[in-house]
Length: 170
Image 1 (cartoon, rainbow, N blue to C red):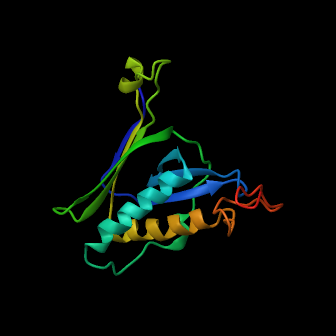
Image 2 (image 1 turned 60 degrees about the vertical axis):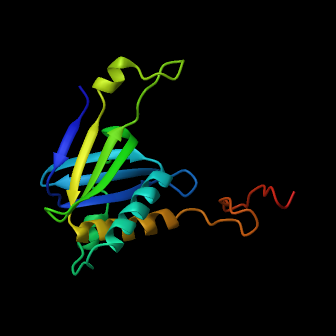
């Protein structure tokens, strides 16, 4: 059976990257007390979650407090429970909480159909965040994503320290 975690409250919900720019691996992490769940994701997924949460927060009253910066660092060891697939995001007006639901990527067979056992055994993480936690996540995610390789001014592709083969400069 896959992992299933649900947090009505968390001490921290964050994103981080391990490795050097160009070879970084991204992780989302939820922590509550001694329980920690880490999910491996793509940089674009982390960025998209932050973008969407930012749009949700724009429609809500401004936050007055933010979690401490130390709470935004990944807690070691960083062992992923699963690899991120579908993401669900929303807002619970009754409890004034932002919902982040992360599900494991679906394994498919050669024809592209989901394997029956893959649907039953999927990892699942559901987290309810305060608006302050969601805002801090967005700011932190933006800084983590931006800390990667600089973009080429001609083509927009990421550049290695030694440069890169730019398709626009032949």
